[in-house]
Length: 493
Image 1 (cartoon, one colour):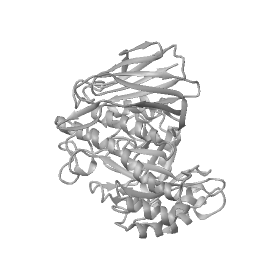
Image 2 (cartoon, rainbow, N blue to C red):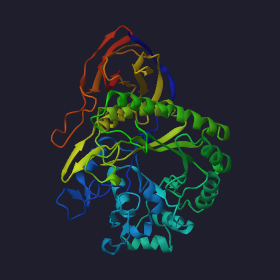
Image 3 (tube, rainbow, N blue to C red):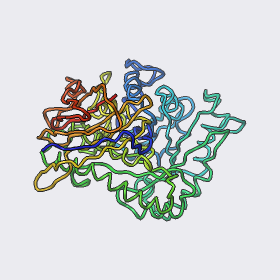
Image 4 (cartoon, helix red, strand yellow):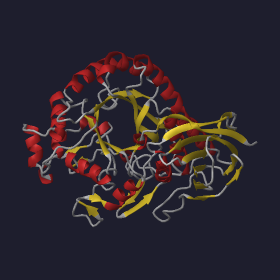
């Protein structure tokens, strides 16, 4: 049955913060080392040790913000070990991720250099779990103070004369778990204390982000908002899409059954419920929505690829991941009044990554292509699009088959993104367009003929966007036929 949608271009619903398309790179597996940092002496083409192909790829999707150094790693990271001559930097054991030696060759200067190369904002996560107030305070001073001080002078000695611009700073990470196993009352008090010494130097205004809840821990949000709201600019939320039982088995990244496809889509849609419920608590203490919801870890989490280090979290990335990304972006757009940043986990070689590398080789994942297709929504104005979707049914359960979002850019072009998450059936959609005289429509599609279709180092272009022509313009409306498992972006002007 054909599904009817109404697009009201004149009904504007807020700005889609480009930071919703943010990224996360942790010292985990081969994300930083091999994925981003190869060192100046590497045979892999690089600029000052950072691999060129990864930089070029990330610039192509207009990466707006990058979170670092963790994750769980952040609360065992001591920043002073990662500055100064690399040969003198302290080596440590990465106890969270694989038990490998961390040589600290990629530290503050290298990260800030990477962000400058990417022309993106740095988002640094500080150590509350095993660090001190002084350590955190001195890190901010080292990075942002222009005048005469021990930390600013040390930065100059290490080759950076001028301070960096730093907007986003997280005061701890997952302090309910790997960041210290704290109660919300205890962390809230620690947050108030630590953030006091995250100072604004020389006109650099820091946006302070408190460590928020794990999934549906609404009590955590209640306590943090009640006790510490006035001291924060943002509050984080972490949620991963896992089709299996997290500890008993997450499910495979490829070769999975039909039921796991459906469950994955259902669990991805659960993000909307989490935002609504946590947002309702935030509204009670912050009705003007001054405090941003910062979903700085999200994405799919499957079992690692066979034969790889279990602590490296290396998984393949399929058309299923692409649909999960599209659904999340639609949900984030719907909540653009509260959600001001999200950071997918993670950028390279870890979990739902943008790229996979193998030596000098690099391939794009289907998720990368969704980020590239959706960059048209960065800082655009969300416009109203409403549809009652048909049911997508599997084994007696139902979820909506189609998800849509729309935005208008400064030139007046309207972009409509549509996901058909049904793994078997086409979706026929008619969009009644109001408030826009259309003279031109063009589109792109990302789809596949297998549920686990993915790109490999043997075939890096198996799943990629192509021109979409499955639509017709009739009077004031668009008739669209979406194939199964597809992500489509239409440009209307």
